[in-house]
Length: 401
Ligand SMILES: *Cc1c(COP(=O)(O)O)cnc(C)c1O
Image (cartoon, rainbow, N blue to C red; front, side, top):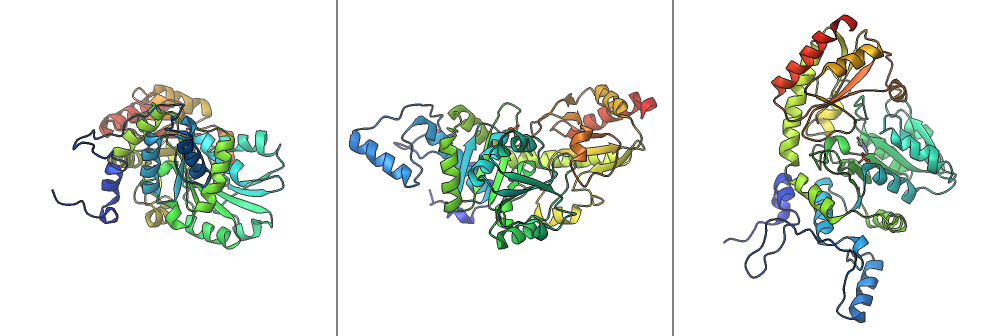
């Protein structure tokens, strides 16, 4: 057998498939990383235990206790660092805990953080319940309407973005915003859940930290809760590591395994989500009851040019605004869907519908309408069946729309 080519010459889909593959022993071995479940790590002698402890405290990723995670965790971390192109990854029990970890790791009493107004809404609860109590000021701003430079204060420590935004999928100019913040020594974090890390690499565009809810596309099967934080430097890794350990964060090896399994098929799943979602978005655009479709891959979307520049594809999330419907009529439309499940979350193989809450929409400066919005996650079903289901729901709810 010829030697494998150097890793960096391989394309990213190939690297994702082989990341963390276990070495063969005695000439053979499994394809997949074993699930190494443990609480206790055993040592040969006290010197080995002390050596592990010292290496860990010096920043090396060796485990001296189960909470630090063993081989399965390492393999997932390596694969995600390869995907996002960063320095080090941290695995957390949910996407929200990944967000909270970043906020607590980087912000101290008296600090100020600027947060894009279209972020995943529960971040605002972290602010109102925890950060305010710690004397940390969070200011929400519109990255497309407000001038970032004039919002930065001497005590601003963090710029927090999400592109595209939740619900309305507003694409942000991550390179330009990051450049302004970094010029002033402000760390830039961005939520990259929408792209799964496959269609968008914010660390290459100037952000310092990429956050994902692995619950969504990395898992891909609606059977896992998990968050991932990837940082771009050893200095940030040290800060994150301190908070991560203090909070006692960890994930189970079975969950690390599931995320790694999901990662192997991320590119093929996302390509199909994009095909199906594009077909649905084009269908929605033609419906007389619909006034706007929010999907950056549509040439008519206001974020289309930025999306084309900074993304390699679009996910399965499509929102649309009704032209006249009341909230009750929008709910009747959602209730008339048969194939779409009704629920929050997304990123699994199945299609979902969610009537957006008006108070969530009003948090976005971008939102100027007052008609109801429905958020769809377009799954991997045959798109003809999805379109037929939407068509029958439009017909069924027609008198109210
Ligand atoms: C779902 C989601 C999260 C939170 O992830 P959980 O695992 O549900 O806690 C964070 N950011 C975005 C953009 C999300 O859609």
